[in-house]
Image 1 (cartoon, rainbow, N blue to C red):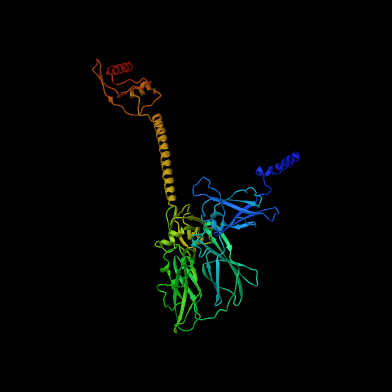
Image 2 (cartoon, rainbow, N blue to C red):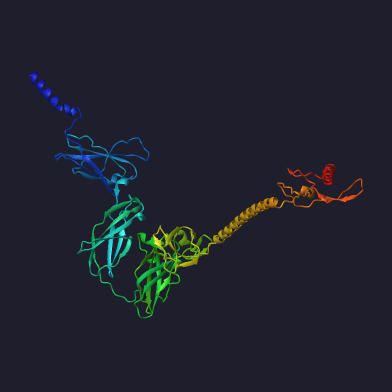
Length: 559
């Protein structure tokens, strides 16, 4: 008996051993997810066990900013002992910008599963924008719509700034599947609808700055009415703007006396939630006018906002009618006019001076558009216009080089803005003829002077050579020195020499007295004062040598 009890006790201990060791037969929930819409929090999970008695309980903890120490786990309100696979714990979360941890486990009366993996979240970053509230009214062929922000009239809000919301409208005819999407304001009017037709629509709130798109509102359907035809109402309201000068134009169908008043509304007022009908103002100078146009430039005080304009017509019986509204975004609506161009020409450059569209005093046009200029220029001949050339400049002064002399050049300029993808018409053609090439006379003069100098140099060389040749010929054939006459007539034989002397020398007459005392007059003998190199002539510098020769000759004659 004792052995039997011992065996039973041993089996019981073996059966209870897993429980004592912390093991369980329940599995943990899987795929834990938290879904956040506005400030509504829903915890969802999957559980594959087929046990109708299983319940689920969740715990959470959160951290203060910059807190690193883990807090104690707390029971998650709204998610205790639930029998389905989701629970709402919106009341538990009040801090939307701090980190939270959530975990979950399955439970029965006898058993508990291990905790699931921890789901970590920062509510603001996983929250979705909820659907807005929509109110509709059908009147006079249009649908008036009023949109409330997703968390209207809520004390606790995920999205603090209601002005950060933008709204998209999707509308379609109930009998058609063709959808049309457009942006709307919180309070807006939908025009251009078919009369007595049922339209369905839905609205979505977005936050463009955070690139967030919300959930669509429930679909609303409404039937339009037929629009009453009133000839008093102005039609075809449009804006013409050139160089930041704005005019409003409209058409009149009324044949009797009528006056018009132009009204405007600052565009930002339409982005607010609320009634702005009392915030329309009259445009100065456009009150009770009879013309169908008006200059409203005076109200454009800033280029960064936008405006809405409409025309109110009033007849002699004080009955009035309002036109449709037109939107004016100054820098988008405005068109750029052509610039004014002046051209001048110098020796080698074509100078282009540009006056900006609207004049230099139009600061808004100059500063906001960051204008550039497209310059077209070409040679304009009598036969045809040659191919145009393009030059893009940022300044209002430009030049064109490589000009052909005595040629008619034409220029036209277009202003454009890359930032706004706008461009003006081209200016009027301005033409000017380039002067002749002033370098050609200089080249001709330089060539002439160079040729003249070369001719003079060559002539000088020729004259020098001829002069030298003349001297040599003269020296050879017409020498300036002659032999003395006594040497030339000596012995009746002519005296030959390499050099023939031509010039007469100084002569002396002398007499020899003999013993008979007879005076003999000899011929004049000539002798040279200078001695020739190898001729044998005697110099007259030594009287002694001269007299010696004379005596010898005399003796021969006497003998």
